[in-house]
Length: 126
Image (cartoon, rainbow, N blue to C red; front, side):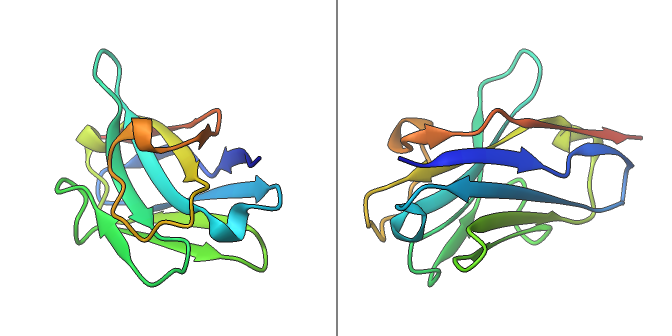
């Protein structure tokens, strides 16, 4: 099992930056593909970024490409999301997720992930 706890959310002005972190506990973190999703009020949860269990592949949703960067640290059991050039439309609750399946596939659907954090609010003011 993997337990996930997000942190780093908050209020930022448009054009600013935030760094989200997700602390993972459990023995399967190093074999887990990790992802970030977000859900804005009244909207469906959507894929933001993912990194495979080997750390050799990262991939992003179209709306954040070139602005967000996902990374993982298997020593500290953390996955981070660096968010730059934030826009008001980035406002959402951001969720960390894990797929504990040793897969190198690109996972962008929320039903492909087994474990979820509780979420952290990101608000971008205009």
